[in-house]
Amino acid sequence: MPSPLDAPLLNGPVPVVVTASAAAAGAFLLWTRRRTWWTRVVPVSAAACALLAVGVGVAVDVLWRPFPEPLPPVLLVWLGLAVLGVVLAVARWRHAGWSARALAVFSAVLVLVGGLSGVNQYFAQYSTLRSALGASDTVSLDAAAKPAADEVHVPEGARLVDVWTPPADLPTRGTLSRTPIPSSTDYRPRDAMVYLPPAYAATPRPRLPVLVLLSGQPGTPRDWIDAGELVRHLDAYARAHKGLAPVVVVPDQLGSTTANPMCLDSPLGKTETYLAKDVPDWVRARLQVDGSRGAWTIAGLSQGGTCSFQLAVRAPSVYGRFIDVSGQREPTLGNRADTVRAAFGGDEQAFHRVNPLDVLKSTRFPDTQGMVVAGRDDSTYHDQDREVYEACLRAGMDVRWRELPGGHDWTVWRPGLVDALPWLGERTGLGG
Image (cartoon, helix red, strand yellow):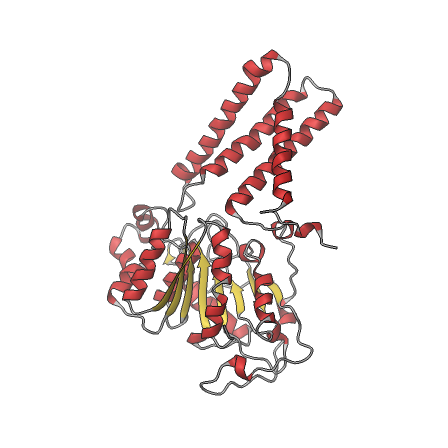
């Protein structure tokens, strides 16, 4: 029997029922025969909630500015409606009996849930309640990554998939672990997530390629696990490839949910060193993987996509391949002036020395492969992604362009990575 945790939240009956219930609850909270309710309470409450939503938008987008792009208007609309439901429930409390009060509270909860559902549908973030609750099982990395004495030998010029014979008792699923990856500088990352495919549990063990995967901003390493449903998709890829899939490491390139050190070494944090040295050194020391440059790929979404592009240009000896999903054209805190002031002390030339688009003008990368993925309806970053793709082509990279239906959300990010797995597998010996 299917678990309620696996009921779809983005299509089917659940979002319809949630939205209809929220609308009915809102209608109940609005309705009363008292004249003062319609002439005073409702207009004042609606105006106050609208001002609150606008105020939040101004505070975040103008005063605080933690994100490169402004808050979507639909987010502010749902915020205003959710708060209005709570305000009306409180206003009804004074003139109601206990049963009516309980119904008002229940209605306010339904309006809040409806608001959350609306936001979730806009971003297409959580496809099931299980993913929204972060219910993925994790195991100890010490247990999952025990050293194997024997390794699979791949002759020169051959592919791993052609010489690999999976044992009869190979697991059907990979493992997911949470682990710290320490920094050699004063940057303090949150814990990383590590996926080991079924083949990693075999003896002899194949030395698998590595995919370093980055979240967007705001974000956490768990975003790819929960919203991206990474384990499910990688297990499916492994089932089709004799248990083979990349070892995936999802480190923290932000430091906190709203921070944005931009994957640079700057006063905001030495995150380029972390991604180009600390993470690769830790992976090679801790896991039995293919350590060659051609077996290493860096990928990410939005700010993480920008970072993957940066590291492909700034650390080409580490990462032979990159996947940039909906990234920006350059590392940014929202605009060039703020970026140069915060990260480079106002030195514009220092910015140009590390900005990948500027580096590509004078340096060629014929040994780097990449994929740039853009949302067809992403009005902010589609053209920037195309600019990145064309700059990579001019610099001699073997790079692919992929355009998917959707905007700057998980309708693009999730398939953007999943659809790139055959491309990645073909180039790292796993099979397309």
